[in-house]
Image (cartoon, helix red, strand yellow):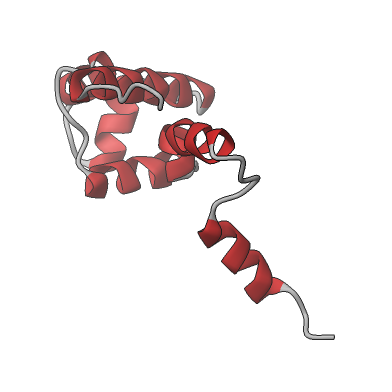
Length: 103
């Protein structure tokens, strides 16, 4: 069984991913903060892992960066799925099934 990361490590890793995605989007901390209604200092704290990002805030961040939640947290789920030998999660398989036309 894989070692479960602690919350401080998760906060730091998600913050690092926030920084990467913000830079890819060409935004400054000030611009992202203004887009989501927080100060640039708060963005710094998120990026450094000092403050946790609430799920509701993460959704707003994703909208501002034109990205998805899985861009932030996907690696934690893909590893588990692959470790279990499943190519995809059950929810993605269910969604694909819904999208397939009836024969």
